[in-house]
Every structure is written in C-alpha cells, then in structure tokens.
Length: 223
Image (cartoon, rainbow, N blue to C red; front, side):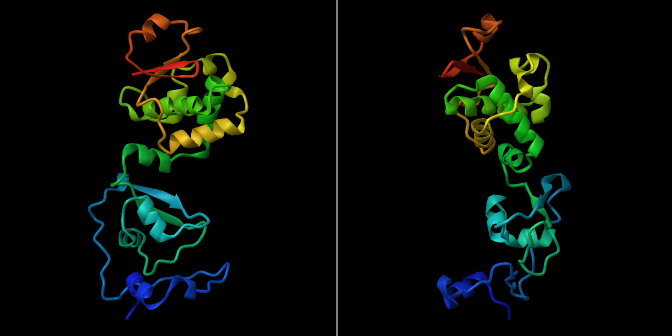
C-alpha cells in the first residue's frame, strides 16, 4: 500500500529525509483512495499555472484554497510530483475576485501598474504609492469600470500621467514594490475608487462631491 502524508509524518522525522538537489521526488497516494470528482468545476473557474521554483502541490493547494486531490484530479496525475515549467490546471472557484486577479496577473499588468504609480505618486510616502495602485485594483474589481488593468489605466481622462505622457517613464524599484503590494491585496484606501491632489486638481469641485476615506501624503482618496 502507498504511504500517506500523515503516515510518513508518524514514521519519520523531517530531519531524517536527505534530499538531493535537482532530483524529483514523488509521494504516492494510497491506491485505494479515489481522487475527488471535479466535474462540478466549470472551465471558467480553472486557470493555467506554470510551475515555478519551490512550488509543491501542497503549497499550491493552500494558496488556491483547494486540496491536493482536486489538483491531481484536474491534471490526471497519479502522484504528487511536479516539475519546474510544467503546466497545471488550478481551480479558482474558492478564491475571492481580488485573489483571482493577483494570481492571473501578467508581466505587462505589473509593468503598467508600476508605471501609473510612478507617474502619479513618485515622491509620495510608500504607503501612498501603494494606495494609488490599490485604486487601480479597486476599479478593476468594480462593475462600473473596465475589468482589466490596462483598460482601467487607459480609460479616457482618468489618470493625469496618461494625459501628460509620464506613464512612459521607467518606474523605479519602489514603484514596482508598491505595485506588488497592491496586487497582493494591501489597500490603505479602504476601497477608494478615486484620488486627487487638492492643490493641483483641475476638477476639485467634482472630487469634493465624493465621500472621503483617507488622506495620504498629498493625495485625498474617495469613494
């Protein structure tokens, strides 16, 4: 019979394992244990994931709020071994929209978000830069706005850095860090959809009709 994770834990201590770098090790699943039925998971709730360095089925199952068995069933796997670069089908049915966005982000999305942060908020406190990124994310998740980062950023007359060309400036490392922080769910704005600088805003009267949530640095954030 195959070993299960719990039996292994009881049989051996972690320090007893001596694993060689570059080798692939698999954990056998009890042959009498059937994989779960995944027919109820619709295709639009499954994403394609490329296995990276350090990934394990255990960690992926935790990250996607599912089980190892479900992942194995979706990918017709007989054991839990995975390789760097391998493509896996992973369920997003148990994730929030914000979590789904964070897990489906592209390099282009990250670059654009860093550019809008750099163009709108460089020189602001780090939390203020994260806040600008959070506004973009909040708009993507709001039905009133477009549902992609690119479309939100390039929606007509929404961001001054797009209008004046500063969106084309190369972001600094802080802008990338702030973008990742916002993508990972940090939102200092409490769900805000707008922000403005009271000293420079062209349509301050309109912003003042919105409900304020917080002021960070030179920016006022509103719903």
